[in-house]
Image (cartoon, rainbow, N blue to C red; front, side, top):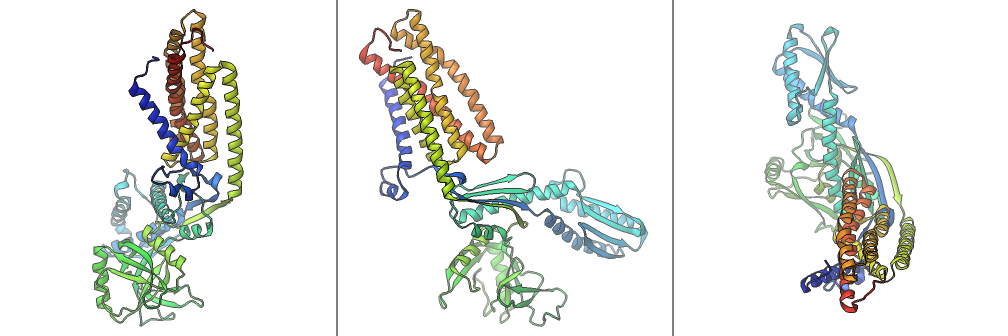
Length: 528
């Protein structure tokens, strides 16, 4: 148990050296690290929102918007189906989250039920669980009222939240921030924490836009007072606002967009956004621009006209540019929104909080003081209790902290206040293994065993107890990580890493140190 081959000694030494190298960048500023980039790893621990400062937002998915959107879709489909089946009806409308209409011929009720069943199957899609997604109430006077079931609303809401999280993540990643926390909270909410972001208003602007892009032909034969069927009135953001009557049907939507980048107009040097369509979008855009040369078309973002260029010639390359008196930052943000894609539903900001870096600095200082105080108390206790062997365990404990920092840096983990608490707890727990071993060794010495036998039996017999204690704690850490939220996960990560590194340092490393000491001095009595 105390014998180490040259290979094992080299292997353990390499692990210690790698751990120290991984932790070393945290002692330097980013500028100094770049000077040694070829010699040292560059990864550092990322500080969380509570340590570094930043923005905290709690968003809610607009469930009412989802219901109304689905019912508006159903209204169009119901109108088409009723007309196709020659069913007489009137007053087809959506009001108070309910679609309703009156059947003029009572004998057509069976046909109406079949149509509604088909519509229910259509909106259920692959998510259909065998239950109808529509509730149909037939009242007196042949009035039919259709609403979505709770199953349907929950299904659409869950899908919208998942899609929104992915798109929000893309938008925030485009800002260049590190380690944002974006997670679902409850049924319809999204928690966002962005450490180090010093412009929360910009974040709110990015997340507050649905970013539904579409391209519409402008109806030149219409005006605000004369809006023909199939057209609609829109405005731009100028002051005063200009009005545009555009064809309701979009010639192409943002779903066909595959890239958008900020740039500058070669003639005016004004900021613009360059965009590029996929193959299908390029084909459609080329066809429409060929048919409408000389006519203006409107580029619409969230029902606001952001640009209205004239089609001077067919645009066949599948790419173009959006200009609209943008600033450089506005052009960059618009390109981010278009690249990330449109949110399926609007997001409502329920809670907004900005954490200043001053509070983070105070937290770091308090954590450093607590860690230093706890470490000093443990070091003194081990030295007083076990003498020379206490010094061996203290060396292992200090390396254990270095290893924890190194692993956190390697994983690019985010350190939070609960994470610091996990490290402090690990400091107290790390010497448990050495206490068990040394107490076993003392028992062996009292039983008259020789120093080498006492040490060998102490390590052997303590191993199973050490493994049992650490495995159960490690399982608890895994459960905390799987089931907990952000702060709890931070605690679980540092605790789990601390358990693994402390097993190595407290058992393997101290055993190597004891083995080297025993081989060199060959004591007749153990100073323990």
